Every structure is written in C-alpha cells, then in structure tokens.
Length: 300
Image 1: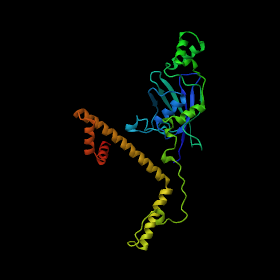
Image 2 (image 1 turned 180 degrees about the horizontal axis):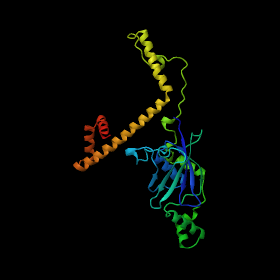
Image 3 (image 1 turned 90 degrees about the vertical axis):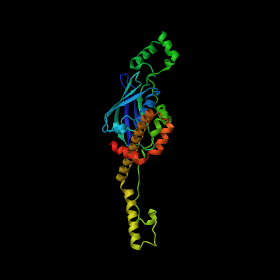
Image 4 (image 1 turned 180 degrees about the vertical axis):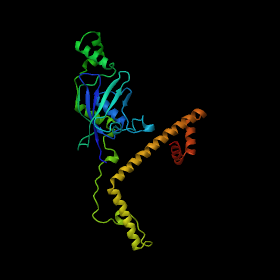
C-alpha cells in the first residue's frame, strides 16, 4: 500500500479578512499529530484545551476518544470532507478543516509542511473574535489607556497581516510533536521486489536439510516448498497489507486489555486499600496473557 498525503485547508472562523493555512501531512497521522501541526502552522502556543469534531465512518469502540488511535484518514477519508477544530474553550477559536486533495508524497519533500497561508494568527488570550477586533481597533487609534496596555503586554508590535511560510515550515521541522509523523507508516512504505532469476534452492531460503535422513525426492520437495513460501511473501503484497492490519487490530486489543486492567486495579485499590506496589505484586502473581485474552473474549 503506497503512502498518501492529505492536503488540508484550515481556516479560522468568524474572522475577516480570512486567516488560513494550507497544510500537507501523511494520511496515517493521528489526530494528536494533526492538532500539533495546526498549532504550529496557525501560530498558536498549544497552551489550552482543544477538540476536533468529525463524522466517523467506523466504530472505534474504546478508542473513539483517543487522539493517538484515530488518524486523519479515518475521519477525513475523501476529498471534500470537513471537520471542526476548536482551540481554547475560553476564547473559543473555531477552525474549519477541508480536504482539498489526497495525493502521493512528492520526492525530496518533507512532511508535514505548509504550502500557503494568509495573515497572522490572533494573539493568545485576546478574548476570541470580539477581543481580536477590539485589539485591532485600539492599534489603529494608537492612543488612550487601552493602547498603553497593549504596549505593556508587547502587543503593539503585533502585525495582523504578517505570514512567513518559510518560518512556519522551519518550526514544523523543529517541533517534536508536529514532526513526529514525518515518515510514511511502516506498512505503507513502498516495497520493490525483483523476481528471482532461477528457481530458489534450500541455500537461497536458509533452509537446513539433513541429507542423512532425507532422500533426493524428499529434499526436492522441501526446497520447492520453501521456495513457494518465499515467492508468496515477495509477490503477494495484499497479504502483507492484511498482515499489517491484523497487527494493528492486535495492538488495539492490547490497549483495550490495559484499559480493563487499569479499571480493575483502581476498583481493587479503592475497595481493599492496598498500595500500588501490593497490587502490582498481585497482578504479577495472578495475571497472565491467556487470562487477559480470555477476559477480552468474554467481554466481546
């Protein structure tokens, strides 16, 4: 499966002239990564709570509220889809997110990146859209006690028309949260397979044949069987993709098991008054992987 890149336009709502950014990031980026990219691209400080609202195509169960488990491709699977992103529940900055394109990554291009934008992000804690317009009005008049306050806060130097794409991309490259997903997912990286020029032998596959116990016919059957396995692995790429999906499903089960175990431990600690170390000893003595899997199976 080839990696893909989502091209998104992020526009701050209730503001005119419009403040927006065009960002590109890998489709497998989780929502927590999308949040980090928006923060850097827009110019926010990531100092407040946030929320992303979108229509899900799939039931994510216990992971539905986990921004590390749901990806951009999950909630924005096609061009034209949209989502709402709210930052700072006090000032309540609402951003509209629209999928403009889904494309292959360009060669020698770093992702995530910002390709275009307009105007500077409002200052943090300025009071939402209404406070932002008041700030601009005070800056234009350049007099009175309100303007003196702006000077004391350092906001008199704020330029609402400023936007530096190169600086945004430099920050995207330097920010550890935003650049965490700068490579394609391991199961999406392009695989180039060259077919063998001759039939594979036991030496090619690393197979050890006991010549003292296997006759010529048995050895031939063994080598052909190993060759078939290797050829299947190198040519049946859909099977590799299915295997990757199975691994991801297994990881989801592990996360669910951890959540169940954590809830059980909290309930036990509250009921018995045991310390965390005492509970840990009980878990090591009583819990095993089969029991965890059985609990998950019974729960389903």
